[in-house]
Image 1 (spheres, one colour):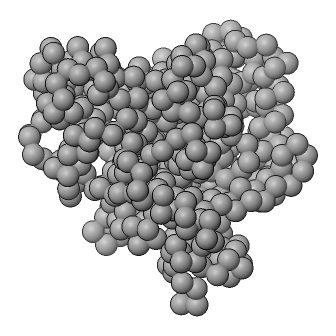
Image 2 (cartoon, one colour):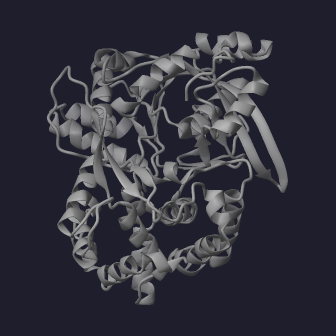
Image 3 (cartoon, helix red, strand yellow):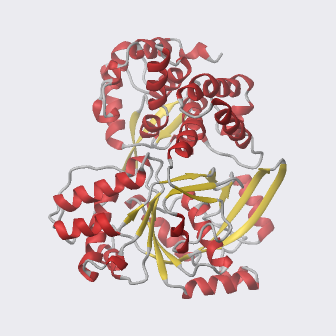
Length: 511
């Protein structure tokens, strides 16, 4: 988003006296929170909560912002140009009434690029004030890959980078239990805290950091499993953006739109709220002994519905969640898929799950939010694995047949990922086509996209090329690719055959 020539960029002097005072206070607060990830979601969820905690007077701390990947580094300078300020716009239906609320959020005090300022990043571990780490690197970012550790060289992999960061803290403070951190990975992965801890310890042993360090991590770092739930769509469409910024009198390169609904469920003792006073600040946060029931309904119904609809919507020319839901046939297809195939596969009472599903669908109809399907589409391979593949397996085992609507979604995903590489400047991107020939940029794991391109090529054609496709061969090659799926999906009885059938008849399925 480029800034307008007629509106100044958001700066403290454009805010109210009270907002300027709050912003100045933040600039004096100790750095207590390291944030790994600079995307829309953290701004519309965690950062807003930190702002609310500070505003309540029950917390006194600021955030140091770091990007999850090298591609995010350029946004740090833009955020610094706005002096850490951004606008959160909450819009939607709440208790049957329309809500529209604008807030200026101020929580960032410093900005560090680990990929260009590696030593400065590690020096953050030496801060006595540091207490919390929050992250959102997407599902694909929370992963273990073999790599060589070269001291002094930046590390892209998130768990490996965290292992080195914690080791610097251990070297600075020794095994002092008081220097342990509360670590909250917000990636939508089951048992995200436990998984991150496992990977950090694996890297620590691989890097030769020693038993004393591993014991300190085991005993004094709080890796907390947690579940986040809020639809955050980020920047509005250009026309709406222009209307809003003209009325406010400033441009905001980080304007973030979100629904009013939110909940953060954290597996941990309620006493932790004394350290991070989310509940005491009046926020809808739950410290619970068991996260599983909350995670199951959210990941498989809310996130699952997004992942289910995305490939179908994009292939058939829909651009937003609401636009798809307002299409009578596609909207009903989503609702019936959740009711008939997802809910029966979960272990909670069906009535409770259906109530949550109905609330979820109401959120999808939010007239204010334009939740873009292309945003949902990012990293969809790992999302489908986490959100829908377990449901497909559970349904198949329970019903002794495949869930036909979930298989349709998987079929559409494979067709959407019939990609070809395209050079854009110095970057290699991957492009697909909608059913009516419109190009789409597919953003996912580059290695996986290259493998998919090869599979499609070997089966006759790729996106944008003429010729007949051997769908049977393509489907078997793709579903059996354990690099992408971490397992051979052709071992699920009938799946490859049904996906092949769907691809041969995809044009007629929603006609």
